[in-house]
Image (cartoon, one colour):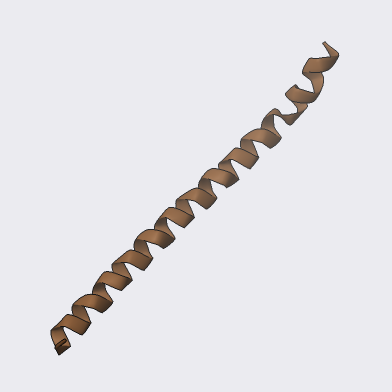
Length: 51
């Protein structure tokens, strides 16, 4: 395993970490949006059974 191989392996690891962090970020965004939507519709869900 030469020096360039180590550099390419580090680059691959870096790209992989970036991709994982990006998907985690997107998932967190999705859950935040879901919570916001649920909070937005919570009064409607509370009112509907009374009707």
